[in-house]
Length: 199
Image 1 (cartoon, rainbow, N blue to C red):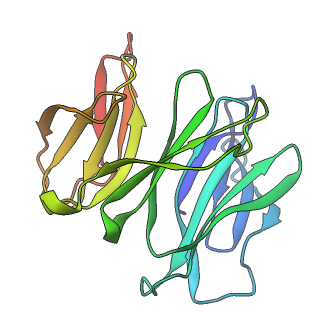
Image 2: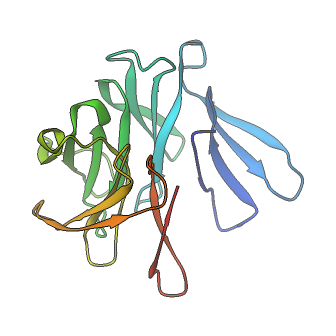
Image 3: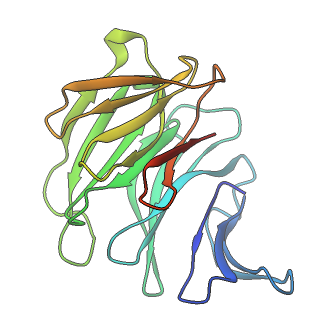
């Protein structure tokens, strides 16, 4: 399993990104129902990162099991349609969204570059992407990310034992050390979304 998300108002039903596609998991019965295949006929790839967008779509990335260069793709599932959005990546990560739903962020971890992609009203890419961050010169490997209540981009950096916060213009706001060297993804939780949970 590469990623999970709520599938609808029923909190017992989760959307699961498996090695071969999307499926719905019923937590009450344990039943797993396939929804749509994603590269199911390509045994060398698997799901990796992903996140639900503000419009109700679900973004999921795939990558080569041996991190083969160029084998990674970012996909979007929305209202019964599956569409590839970005191809030619190696380790696609850091998928997250601005609070207004009009921009997506993502990275190809080995490059250290984080991109900002404008989105249309229904959440599909609209216009050209722009470079938001280049963490390569800092020797950082951006992995999972989330946008916090202040609009800051919070990214776990694999191998650095930290989550870094950047403002919307890409200026570093702070570094949050975590207990493990390979932090992979932050999420927000707690009563006021004032806790950061980091894998």
